[in-house]
Image (tube, rainbow, N blue to C red; front, side, top):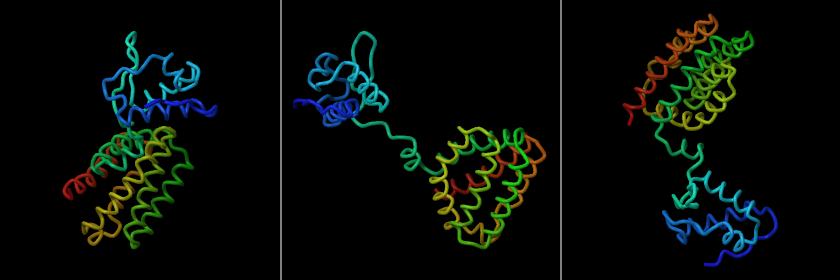
Amino acid sequence: MPLGSVRPSPLVEQAATRLREQITGGTWPVGTKLPGETTLAKELGVGRSTLREALRALTGAGLVQPRQGAGVFVIATEPVADWPARLRRAAVTDVYEVRMLVEVQAARLAALRRTDEDIAAMEAALDGRKAAAAAADAEFVDADIALHAAVVAAAHNPVLTDLFAEFTPALRQGLIDLLELTDVRAEEENHGDAAHAALVRAVEAKDPERAALVTQEELQSTLTLLRTRD
């Protein structure tokens, strides 16, 4: 089918959309070499610089791959899912394994970098977790995550903070489901209180190895429960 000219603005987005439609619609199957820049630019009614930007967007989406001296080839007919979408589809145990990697290092850094304000925030979150012990599972999970978020924030690494925030929705639902399917809070409403208090004390004492170990053990115990649920 003919590509058809695009309207003046925004040219890059429109060009990328038209090219994407050809790929996802099967006009250019996987393995196909795209027509040359001159041909594509002419069919789309755009300049070659605009076309190159559009092709870069498709490369970033995992649809095409430039090959030096050979041209641009189709490598997939569906774009690669973005990170939040992949997390939503992932098994909670897989997400939790990565969470452990992030939080163990975050706890270690928090113990090295924490401020008095960070400790105050962690103490408040620990109190909030205790106060939520008699509440519904969702509220207790929210309070638990808030405490972990306070520890991660104390690492003072914005990438770690953002990464933890990306995990939160998937973790939250997985933990709520876990509590609903097990009786851990029937035996102990404030499940894990001692471990979380120990984590705060280790960060306060500026003991990075202790903070990392407590985090590792606490998260591992939850991961074990998640795996027995599957």
